[in-house]
Image 1: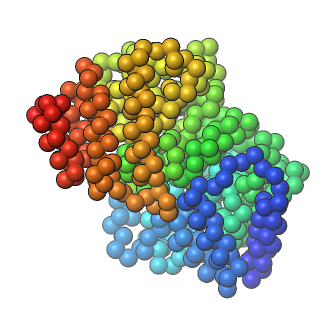
Image 2: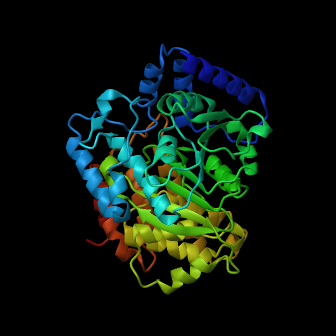
Image 3: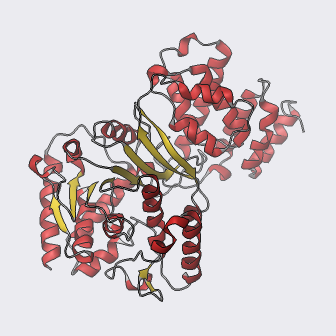
Length: 474
């Protein structure tokens, strides 16, 4: 009970301070407001540490599953990681889950280590980061959940780091403190509530930072800042906030693994049009779409594993040169992500180049990723928008309006989206309206295959109507 009592004391102090202090931070997205309210209702009710950890590992921070029936999945995860990271093949079998995790989710291997299905999911973040930068000593995580990734970083058999910092809601930090004190009894926990706490110089230490005090981490030094999963669940305002925050930190490497390139009518947990936004003076250092472990955990969505690095350049619009040189190549989802994450800040935008990117994305990918809405919005809000040709202006305005309607109609109101696109005739027809509107351009014959992505009965009826109007050929 001592661990629970101390963690509750920290939580109450942080929650009270967050409620009383003025802040420049946005409001929580509806998804995380629901999580926060649910956690508030449970924090004071846990009878013991094990009950608190059980709640933390099942409430939605990650997707830990019962080990029974998943043993073959565990073997396949190990095989995938050895294939992806052959230089870490020996160490992969030495990673271990914690003995305080839910017993029914743990399997003991022949070498005595405890593993779980979600452990391998967390592992690939670390393996990718340590492959890119082998000498990481200090890590900061935006949204650390119940502390699972923190423990793996601090205890990993490849290169255990010196200290770890978690920035999160006070409610989430309560569960992180309970789990880490239980799983790592020798780990020092510093709960940062005053400015003098924000000095990450100690070894074997985890610093817990309440969200409303995130601005003070600029006095700390990090080799790596990470976010996995939660950035895509925040509002666009929060994505902008974290992009600006990143630029104020003493760190030059940011690792993100978040949903990317999901169809605008199938948002699932997504609450924004893009995540992350690359800050000014940063660019892509490494990019991968759909890591094999991601496909094992969530096969119906795209996700981008991207490392952003701080790197100055004399040509902030260099990505348009790459786009022009590759104009004759068919665009892939990885190419699309590379362009989007390397787009310059608005003052350096090339509107016609980005309109070309929008058209090529639709024609080559044959679906409408939500990031198209982000691009059309930055085009329309650019000061140079009024100076472009009228036909291009009309195209972007019409496309953006239709994307917005689909986006808002499918925007999740609970923890997850209600996928209505394939059942809602009005939304289906709006997508066809976009195609019909752009059919006046010479490039539309290449995008007819897009229609096949929306083959609900309402779409088929709309197709027949369009054919009857001689607006689509067979």
